[in-house]
Length: 201
Ligand code: GDP
Ligand code: MG
Image (tube, rainbow, N blue to C red; front, side):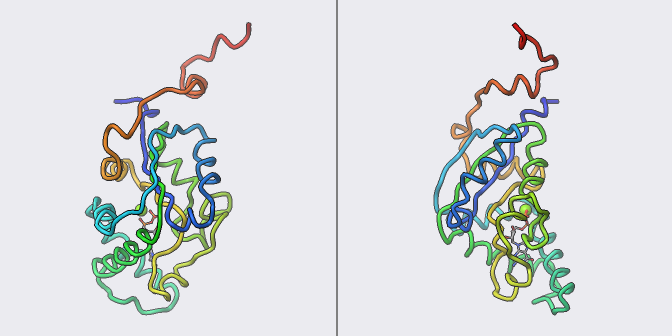
């Protein structure tokens, strides 16, 4: 089994993250925990790339549809359909509009438990209920209520892979193998070596 330090995850700073001038703040939060940035680029995504991205995981559309239906029901509203796939399609359409509205920054972060830790730092999908201390909880205030009423995607600043298998599909979707760089940084010895030695002279 490969060492956990080789785990990689995909992060995209969404168009609202760039508009809010939060690039540095967001990078800082992943960097300071000890993760290593191994790929980075800025571009305006096409609708095709966004649609393909969200359909890489065959279960995602159904899951997001179920989540959306229950959020409508929680508000006491009738969902646009009771079929999770149909509601999932609606979310994909909203995401295509949102994610192609301006430049984004895509990156790959590497380090132990990268997928789980990046999700923890990023926070829950809905900024309104995301925990304080997370990026989505600290820097934005959107809600299912506002987004669904306006027929748009939740504006939550960031995409982050949800699972290791999602990350393994999403990284090659956005980056060629030569764009992801394997290199070392000195602090990895303190984070990962079995013994810390040669500090005192
Ligand atoms: P994430 O992994 O936390 O980003 O959430 P998902 O993978 O479930 O959904 C992808 C993105 O679709 C979210 O980040 C939101 O921008 C948007 N989204 C998801 N669910 C809903 C919903 O029920 N309503 C609306 N308006 N947007 C949603
Ligand atoms: Mg997701």
